[in-house]
Image 1 (tube, rainbow, N blue to C red):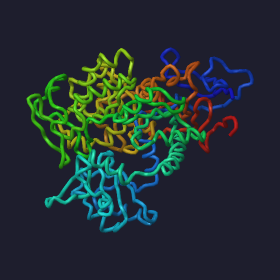
Image 2 (image 1 turned 180 degrees about the vertical axis):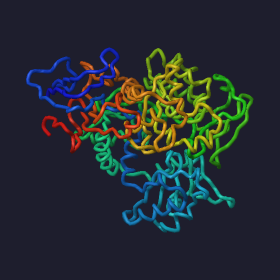
Image 3 (image 1 turned 180 degrees about the horizontal axis):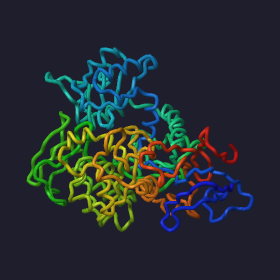
Image 4 (image 1 turned 45 degrees about the vertical axis):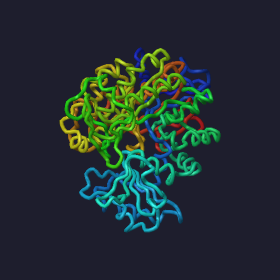
Length: 545
């Protein structure tokens, strides 16, 4: 149905025509140059239209499931977390798992232990995922499901007697979750239905999903087949499955307009909250040095952190993939037609990733593959400009900066390159913003406010010199993710010929005071010309509502 949106403001985010007061949508769900005869008129009554909001890094099924799990973000101690678990026990189905999410023990005076959960949960298996998604806290009933914890890999924490504490980190956490505590597809599909409704209500029209390891491609495929998929999905795939993809002749970008194959996912290191990020320590080596390290050198096996000395550098943290290994993955991906999205938190991990992209550039750059580093939370000064120089995008999470500020100040004291979004932009890098939900909430408007204000509470801005402008934050939530998805010629801006993916806001984010950014509400969301959300109190009535 052709429509005309008028009576408000339209931010096209296109350089030539950045603002207009009328938007025409044709029968094919694209922005039209002029209204079609007989088009339905939607009077916006002063509201503001922006391109549909993207989340460039989200674990969508996991986030959807988390809406019904025990939430531990507010737990300031072991006792707080245990009390939340006790509160969730009555709703745990007989024979089922009690799952929770969001704990972070870095600031707790007492370390989490299986006995804390045993005291309240008894024989009910409990699996609590940390806020950064890199640790798992289990009780005795859950641990009993695994006959050999050492077979899980890094990192199984043990007490002074050599007994497992119930805390697993990195590969051990992921392996246990996949083998013993993984939710079923039907459960994920049902949860995702609610997740889609909530995402649409927040103006989201596209996501880059990182739950490929969990089977999310099947989840989205089922929703697509039932005509329930109400946003666009770019699906990442674990790099270990590249052989299967190549054997089938699959390449990035293939699929349905609403569900397409995206990037290969690789992990370089751990995370800030679990103290497993890979950090340069002491005398820094220069970019490009140190590749002579053997694959797997210095990996942790029994503790949360470690230190390793070499002739090239000192680093600390957990190394999951070496620079040399990543280079081979990038080259193999290029051969099969896939770009790589590599998780890198610490400055050593980011440097190793950039080095690998630099050494393999002859393989991927001629193909136009759009490579990306996920998070890029801590960067050495010499590495900031390398993103733009190499053509590697920074897939960041604006909300992480104010959320992590206290922990970053404590663990990364004196390091200047933490959450350096302003520096990356000034150096010419492309930024795409996401939430890393369920680490933070899937809410692009909250991310935009965090990127601009650098605070999410009443405290002054944290490292305000790294703030971005509202327009830059909007571009990182629209144009940047569309470019990474290879869809910048079809969506991301609101000019004729582009997909009519849009969100209607209750005020103009470019003209309202910065302090009002957290208060902006979504009044409506459109995907390819179809309204997928209209707020109950919206001052306009789209056709058919």
